[in-house]
Image 1: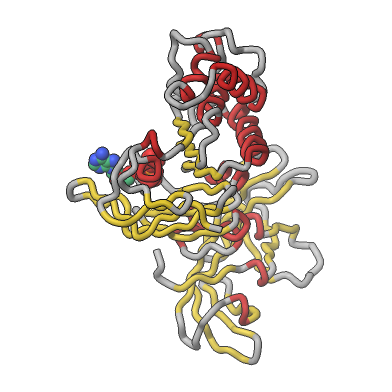
Image 2: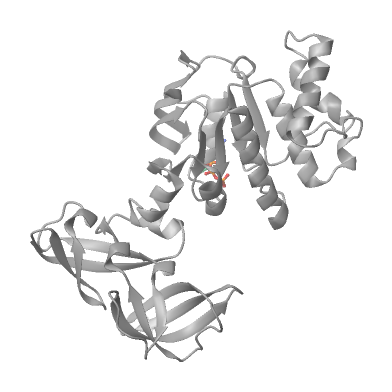
Length: 361
Ligand code: ATP
């Protein structure tokens, strides 16, 4: 059931429209992520849900109540931003208790809730320290404890991990997810980092230029990108022009630029007619490189040359030349990677192709 709804939300800043008629339904207890490049309107959307910005048009509903005119402190939301903004001269326990100060919570209850919140973020012994005595990761956990202690109906997180170094970010995203599962708080998370969004979310809302491009489970937006923008933004994709030659029974025949004739099941290409232009997307990890001597298999196969190898330890990213095409492949390495200049067999399963309508960018 939907717990947070945005209905036809528009936000204008003077002549700039940051959010264009956005509608969203967020289920109770779910973890959703607003994902998109810088400037696409993620923070503006989150700030409108928080009550830090007023929408120019549209309605925001939380828990069945229209909140457009409800001030931030009456929305019962937990907020965590990139800069954790702890009070430096208050102890950790006082920082966490701050959110309870203006609520009707007894002293005993406050002490208990602060203790529970510190337990939840797995820092039970730091209550007497000051923020300056904590690492960045610990401070961010405290900011989370401070947001959670009020038992918010929605937790709003704006790039909360981006100030942390790479290893800590990975630890913290596991931690955040655990805390969200444990508490069941409906959570809206903003990030421009696709791996964070894919790893943490129940649903990902991909935004571009103030509009929603696609909403779906992480594997859905990754495996079935609805537009060229998403195929380019998430993961590494080869995107080729193709034309539909004809449809026969359950099969569709395409001619793809540089690859030639490819036959796909009709269910895979959507609504398509003969002569329609489409774009086909082949994810870099779905292009498999084999030695030229490898036996033919059921995959589509063309010959190519490795132009550049970007060695990544357990995997390599290859830049390939196939006729006039430049393709990218990301393959796990079993022994040693292919070398630059090497001729290879480039293969993929037609079933791994995603078709998107031509000219959607
Ligand atoms: P980032 O990842 O860089 O934070 P974002 O997706 O969160 O980006 P927003 O901060 O929501 O993007 O900004 C969306 C658009 O609205 C941008 O073009 C931005 O310049 C504009 N914008 C945001 N706040 C204001 C403001 N107060 N006044 C004018 N324009 C603004």
